[in-house]
Image 1 (cartoon, rainbow, N blue to C red):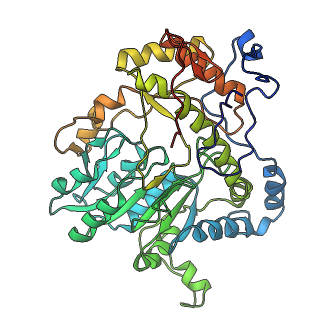
Image 2: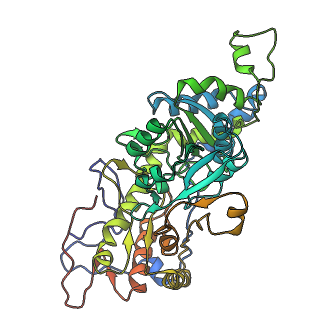
Image 3: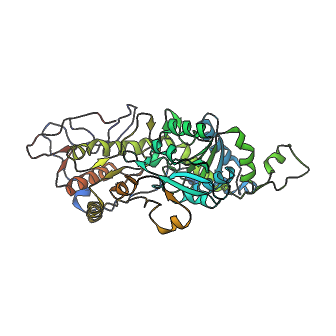
Length: 442
């Protein structure tokens, strides 16, 4: 019997639908064309997950006016869940990951001219948060196999002005946190993890975002689980920073300490801060998704594993490269990226896939390239060996919770067609008629 496109590489009891449950009854069975082969589909890059309980939870939150601004039952549920998934984090829900990063930068108490080390291959929010505090950004190169910051290059970029290291875990794949934390401890630096893409992603069995002194996570509509559009969280992992985090979170006041009876007769302004709070309606939406996050991630992993498995013949033939997962890291299938020969081939690939009705998308433009970066005091330390070159090769395939098996197969067929190959029922038809050897994907 021919294999299902959706493969369980994690050896868990996954109830994956087969791409074609009604065929492959015999060795020479012929597969009838799917509806996607009859007419050109329209497969988007991303569709936010819907689990079915969002509306009822939102209604419940909306009718409780006392906690509508935030801090109600659903906020408590989300915070407790996130804290239970870490060893020692104090979690603050925020109205976006951008705001989470801005809150983290305030907690770091930076002075103008302080330096922050970060990858250039990231979203601009990663560095804007620190630039707003007067810091200067020092970029270092990436590891092309993961597109994460190369931890082995950080040490050489440290100066007496360095205060913070900001690793960004691209695609939910962990940076080398052992090396990064060791460097931080030796040089007395803070680490702020940009774990925007990392719900349910781990490094050595531990939730990403919980290694550094502070971690930031996103629940934007483009992420695996969402708060209904925007949303984020700050993980404060250093107990000595919690009191300051509470003040920053509540507009720079000691409001939380006051309500715990630790100060009085009222609360007062103590430092810089802002309103970072996620409203209760969005917390309710987020809880609906978080309560089903295992189901969402499971399905995304099935799709990711199908791509990984069935693109291997093209990888072995040298047509493309796909991401490598460090043995210490367990990703969450946030994205599936591949690399082609260069910018020109990537452009042709994108146009071809668009003509086939498949939406693919590139990703970040390195932040040291626009002129505004230099104007704001950013600089690249060392050689840009991989950041720019690899960013011009990378593109991403559609991957979303409600994506059907037929859509997954159609995307794979289209990728094969671009390279002049045929994809039939999970087997590449090579010129000599011999199928590729089977293998166990990671």
